[in-house]
Image 1 (cartoon, rainbow, N blue to C red):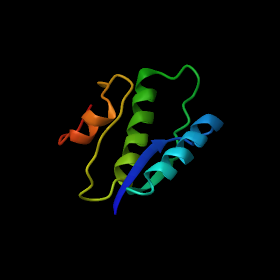
Image 2 (cartoon, helix red, strand yellow):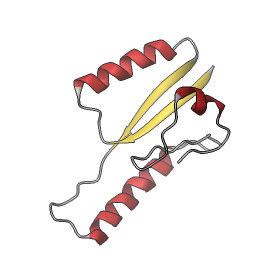
Image 3 (cartoon, rainbow, N blue to C red):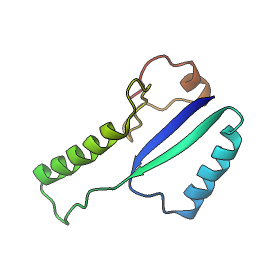
Image 4 (cartoon, rainbow, N blue to C red):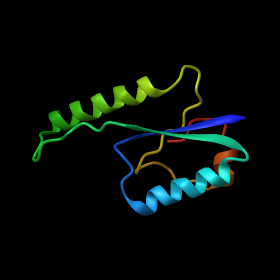
Length: 97
């Protein structure tokens, strides 16, 4: 059975998100094992400089990379990324950004 690991920075706190994760985990359980890995987020001071924000992103990026198993197929999701539907995602054989 395939394993899907979602790696996110910070904890999922909002009740509607945790309920959605539970619902999708239940739906997917017949097809795969879903694992959510919540990594610690780096504290960013108020009014942080661009250089400080870059350092925060680098530290969080290092944590993400360390959590990815060797040989894993990686799909990176970003706010500024291209939107695709489930069918398109299932047919993808490349990393979507």
